[in-house]
Image (cartoon, rainbow, N blue to C red; front, side, top):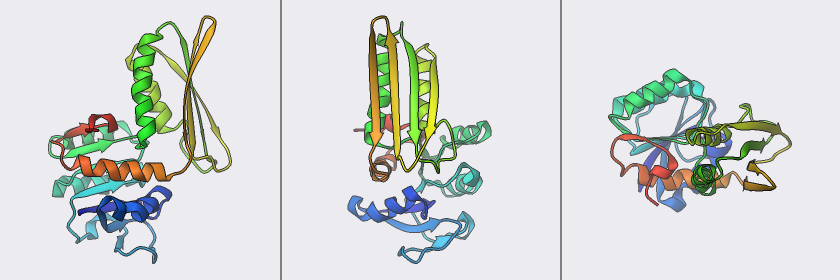
Length: 229
Protein backbone atom coordinates (compact mmCIF):
# COMPACT_ATOMS: atom_id res chain seq x y z
CA UNK A 1 0.00 0.00 0.00
CA UNK A 2 1.30 3.44 -0.96
CA UNK A 3 1.63 5.87 1.95
CA UNK A 4 0.67 9.45 1.08
CA UNK A 5 0.61 12.82 2.80
CA UNK A 6 -2.39 14.82 1.59
CA UNK A 7 -2.08 18.61 1.57
CA UNK A 8 -5.50 20.24 1.59
CA UNK A 9 -7.13 17.19 3.17
CA UNK A 10 -10.20 19.14 4.32
CA UNK A 11 -10.88 20.73 0.94
CA UNK A 12 -13.51 19.51 -1.51
CA UNK A 13 -11.06 17.49 -3.59
CA UNK A 14 -8.86 16.51 -0.65
CA UNK A 15 -11.77 15.05 1.30
CA UNK A 16 -12.77 12.95 -1.72
CA UNK A 17 -9.20 11.70 -2.17
CA UNK A 18 -9.22 10.62 1.47
CA UNK A 19 -12.63 8.96 1.09
CA UNK A 20 -11.64 6.96 -2.02
CA UNK A 21 -7.99 6.25 -1.15
CA UNK A 22 -8.43 2.70 0.17
CA UNK A 23 -10.09 1.63 -3.09
CA UNK A 24 -6.83 2.50 -4.85
CA UNK A 25 -4.58 0.78 -2.29
CA UNK A 26 -3.43 4.18 -1.00
CA UNK A 27 -3.12 5.02 2.70
CA UNK A 28 -3.34 8.67 3.75
CA UNK A 29 -0.91 8.70 6.68
CA UNK A 30 -1.19 12.43 7.44
CA UNK A 31 -2.90 15.56 6.22
CA UNK A 32 -2.03 19.23 5.98
CA UNK A 33 -4.74 21.83 6.56
CA UNK A 34 -5.60 24.92 8.58
CA UNK A 35 -8.29 23.18 10.63
CA UNK A 36 -8.65 19.78 12.37
CA UNK A 37 -11.11 17.14 11.19
CA UNK A 38 -12.52 14.46 13.48
CA UNK A 39 -13.88 12.51 10.51
CA UNK A 40 -10.47 11.34 9.28
CA UNK A 41 -8.37 8.60 10.78
CA UNK A 42 -5.00 10.30 10.46
CA UNK A 43 -3.24 13.25 12.07
CA UNK A 44 -3.71 16.66 10.48
CA UNK A 45 -0.91 19.20 10.77
CA UNK A 46 -0.96 22.94 10.21
CA UNK A 47 2.28 22.80 8.23
CA UNK A 48 4.86 20.31 6.99
CA UNK A 49 7.43 21.06 9.71
CA UNK A 50 5.63 18.90 12.27
CA UNK A 51 5.07 15.79 10.17
CA UNK A 52 6.60 12.64 11.65
CA UNK A 53 4.93 9.95 9.53
CA UNK A 54 7.05 8.42 6.74
CA UNK A 55 5.47 8.46 3.29
CA UNK A 56 6.02 7.46 -0.33
CA UNK A 57 4.55 10.60 -1.93
CA UNK A 58 2.71 13.88 -1.36
CA UNK A 59 -0.54 14.90 -3.05
CA UNK A 60 -1.30 18.64 -2.97
CA UNK A 61 -4.76 20.10 -3.48
CA UNK A 62 -4.37 23.13 -1.24
CA UNK A 63 -3.33 26.54 -2.56
CA UNK A 64 -0.39 28.07 -4.35
CA UNK A 65 0.02 30.19 -1.20
CA UNK A 66 1.12 27.04 0.65
CA UNK A 67 3.85 26.28 -1.89
CA UNK A 68 6.89 27.04 0.26
CA UNK A 69 6.16 24.40 2.90
CA UNK A 70 5.32 21.82 0.25
CA UNK A 71 8.47 22.60 -1.74
CA UNK A 72 10.77 22.50 1.29
CA UNK A 73 9.36 19.18 2.52
CA UNK A 74 9.66 17.49 -0.88
CA UNK A 75 13.18 18.85 -1.35
CA UNK A 76 14.37 17.80 2.11
CA UNK A 77 12.93 14.29 1.97
CA UNK A 78 13.16 13.59 -1.79
CA UNK A 79 9.49 12.68 -1.90
CA UNK A 80 7.56 12.40 -5.22
CA UNK A 81 5.05 15.20 -5.58
CA UNK A 82 1.65 15.43 -7.28
CA UNK A 83 0.42 19.03 -7.48
CA UNK A 84 -3.20 19.51 -8.48
CA UNK A 85 -3.19 23.13 -7.31
CA UNK A 86 -3.09 25.95 -9.88
CA UNK A 87 -2.09 29.61 -9.84
CA UNK A 88 1.65 29.22 -9.26
CA UNK A 89 3.82 32.22 -10.06
CA UNK A 90 6.94 32.28 -12.21
CA UNK A 91 9.29 31.90 -9.26
CA UNK A 92 7.45 28.83 -7.97
CA UNK A 93 7.57 27.20 -11.41
CA UNK A 94 11.31 27.89 -11.54
CA UNK A 95 11.73 26.13 -8.19
CA UNK A 96 9.83 23.10 -9.49
CA UNK A 97 12.07 23.01 -12.56
CA UNK A 98 15.06 22.84 -10.23
CA UNK A 99 13.44 20.26 -7.94
CA UNK A 100 12.60 17.97 -10.88
CA UNK A 101 16.29 17.00 -11.00
CA UNK A 102 15.85 15.20 -7.70
CA UNK A 103 12.28 13.83 -7.65
CA UNK A 104 9.39 13.01 -10.02
CA UNK A 105 6.78 15.79 -10.01
CA UNK A 106 3.37 15.83 -11.65
CA UNK A 107 2.03 19.36 -12.15
CA UNK A 108 -1.52 19.12 -13.48
CA UNK A 109 -4.15 21.83 -13.88
CA UNK A 110 -6.69 19.02 -14.23
CA UNK A 111 -6.30 15.36 -13.28
CA UNK A 112 -9.54 14.01 -14.72
CA UNK A 113 -8.96 11.21 -17.21
CA UNK A 114 -11.44 12.63 -19.74
CA UNK A 115 -10.06 16.18 -19.68
CA UNK A 116 -6.54 14.98 -20.33
CA UNK A 117 -7.82 13.04 -23.33
CA UNK A 118 -9.32 16.35 -24.51
CA UNK A 119 -5.90 18.01 -24.16
CA UNK A 120 -4.51 15.50 -26.67
CA UNK A 121 -7.49 15.91 -29.00
CA UNK A 122 -7.15 19.71 -28.96
CA UNK A 123 -3.47 19.50 -29.82
CA UNK A 124 -4.17 17.36 -32.89
CA UNK A 125 -7.31 19.25 -33.91
CA UNK A 126 -5.61 22.64 -33.73
CA UNK A 127 -2.89 21.45 -36.08
CA UNK A 128 -5.51 20.09 -38.48
CA UNK A 129 -7.84 23.11 -38.37
CA UNK A 130 -5.14 25.74 -38.59
CA UNK A 131 -7.32 28.23 -40.50
CA UNK A 132 -9.97 28.38 -37.78
CA UNK A 133 -10.81 31.00 -35.16
CA UNK A 134 -10.66 29.30 -31.75
CA UNK A 135 -12.59 30.12 -28.58
CA UNK A 136 -12.51 28.48 -25.14
CA UNK A 137 -15.51 28.85 -22.83
CA UNK A 138 -15.37 27.60 -19.26
CA UNK A 139 -18.06 27.50 -16.56
CA UNK A 140 -17.49 26.70 -12.88
CA UNK A 141 -19.24 27.04 -9.53
CA UNK A 142 -19.61 30.49 -7.99
CA UNK A 143 -17.07 29.71 -5.23
CA UNK A 144 -14.14 29.26 -7.60
CA UNK A 145 -11.73 32.14 -7.07
CA UNK A 146 -9.50 31.94 -10.16
CA UNK A 147 -10.83 33.07 -13.52
CA UNK A 148 -10.12 31.82 -16.09
CA UNK A 149 -9.56 28.33 -14.75
CA UNK A 150 -6.19 26.62 -14.80
CA UNK A 151 -7.63 24.08 -17.22
CA UNK A 152 -8.69 26.82 -19.65
CA UNK A 153 -5.19 28.30 -19.46
CA UNK A 154 -3.72 24.87 -20.20
CA UNK A 155 -5.98 24.54 -23.25
CA UNK A 156 -4.93 28.00 -24.39
CA UNK A 157 -1.26 27.08 -23.93
CA UNK A 158 -1.70 23.90 -25.99
CA UNK A 159 -3.35 25.87 -28.78
CA UNK A 160 -0.61 28.51 -28.68
CA UNK A 161 2.05 25.80 -28.91
CA UNK A 162 0.46 24.92 -32.27
CA UNK A 163 0.88 28.50 -33.49
CA UNK A 164 -2.71 29.66 -32.94
CA UNK A 165 -4.42 32.06 -30.54
CA UNK A 166 -7.49 31.26 -28.46
CA UNK A 167 -9.83 33.64 -26.63
CA UNK A 168 -11.11 32.51 -23.21
CA UNK A 169 -14.49 33.44 -21.76
CA UNK A 170 -15.59 32.47 -18.24
CA UNK A 171 -18.76 32.13 -16.17
CA UNK A 172 -19.15 31.49 -12.43
CA UNK A 173 -22.61 30.23 -11.48
CA UNK A 174 -24.40 28.05 -8.92
CA UNK A 175 -22.66 24.74 -8.09
CA UNK A 176 -21.45 23.72 -11.54
CA UNK A 177 -18.45 21.40 -11.16
CA UNK A 178 -16.78 22.37 -14.41
CA UNK A 179 -17.43 22.60 -18.13
CA UNK A 180 -14.93 23.45 -20.86
CA UNK A 181 -15.93 23.96 -24.50
CA UNK A 182 -13.41 24.50 -27.29
CA UNK A 183 -14.96 25.82 -30.50
CA UNK A 184 -13.30 25.99 -33.92
CA UNK A 185 -14.97 28.40 -36.35
CA UNK A 186 -14.26 27.67 -40.03
CA UNK A 187 -15.82 28.92 -43.24
CA UNK A 188 -19.25 27.32 -43.36
CA UNK A 189 -18.80 24.96 -40.41
CA UNK A 190 -18.14 24.77 -36.67
CA UNK A 191 -16.30 22.06 -34.74
CA UNK A 192 -16.87 21.85 -30.99
CA UNK A 193 -15.19 19.78 -28.27
CA UNK A 194 -16.81 19.76 -24.83
CA UNK A 195 -15.91 18.23 -21.48
CA UNK A 196 -18.23 18.29 -18.48
CA UNK A 197 -17.27 17.09 -15.02
CA UNK A 198 -20.42 15.73 -13.38
CA UNK A 199 -18.78 15.18 -10.00
CA UNK A 200 -15.61 16.26 -8.21
CA UNK A 201 -14.89 12.55 -7.69
CA UNK A 202 -13.36 12.45 -11.17
CA UNK A 203 -10.48 14.58 -9.87
CA UNK A 204 -9.92 12.37 -6.83
CA UNK A 205 -9.95 9.26 -9.02
CA UNK A 206 -7.47 10.86 -11.40
CA UNK A 207 -5.12 11.90 -8.59
CA UNK A 208 -5.13 8.46 -6.95
CA UNK A 209 -4.57 6.78 -10.30
CA UNK A 210 -1.67 9.10 -11.12
CA UNK A 211 0.17 8.87 -7.80
CA UNK A 212 0.63 5.11 -8.19
CA UNK A 213 2.25 5.71 -11.57
CA UNK A 214 4.25 8.78 -10.55
CA UNK A 215 6.26 7.06 -7.83
CA UNK A 216 7.64 4.67 -10.46
CA UNK A 217 8.75 7.46 -12.80
CA UNK A 218 12.33 8.78 -13.07
CA UNK A 219 13.06 12.27 -11.80
CA UNK A 220 11.42 14.98 -13.89
CA UNK A 221 8.51 17.42 -14.22
CA UNK A 222 5.53 15.74 -15.88
CA UNK A 223 1.99 16.41 -17.00
CA UNK A 224 -0.83 13.85 -16.88
CA UNK A 225 -0.28 12.54 -20.39
CA UNK A 226 3.41 11.88 -19.76
CA UNK A 227 2.46 9.03 -17.44
CA UNK A 228 1.96 5.51 -18.84
CA UNK A 229 -1.60 4.52 -19.67
